[in-house]
Image 1 (cartoon, rainbow, N blue to C red):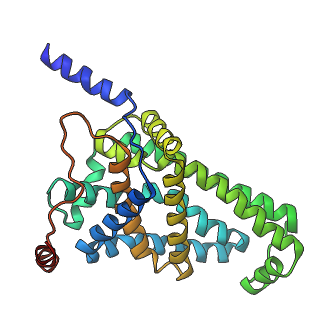
Image 2: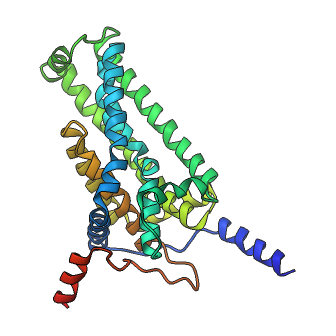
Length: 290
């Protein structure tokens, strides 16, 4: 009987949308600060994992050049960020473990692959993947509609068409507007969904509903978070993707802390916003400050 009640309670927890907090823009900045602190706690581990993103983007860039579909290079670079919330699972797990006072060695980031919520996480990851492919199709259709089916054969030729013609400027404006709409959709369904599934093992529908509810309850803070993500990702991409080895881990960790601020903890569960520092120098500075 007790076991039945336990399973029933767990199922109810997976079906119920968690309570949402109202936060301020200062909470968003605080989450970003905590994300930076988590990154600096073990930077070598996170930089190693962060190299995955620029490597993938570099491979995609060479593939695009080889296939003579250069017009898709910018949509690939920007649109691949739509998968960012899924790619950052490693960093959510590290922040979760640090919060609980567990071992945060880089190898433990892959514990996410053993999570009971892995199927739900993969399902929402597929949703983001579909949005990513849809964005690429939309970008291709827009380019063909403005310039025809003949793609430029070199980057200089592409830049000339885009920046020196009226159709090129229309492509810039319309393309970024369409991309913005995709970004809003991804932000609204993923701002807390992946950390929530990792933390409470809820279903994909509950995770997405909670994320949308959090967005609607906090439109200005979530919009600020989206702007921060966009600016930092743009800076990372502008450095030929090298900057992403810092940007991606920081945003991943910050997303976990933003989740903690947006979602009310489960009854009876104490959540520490920060684990004690494992860096002796930082701990000494902290003691001196107090």
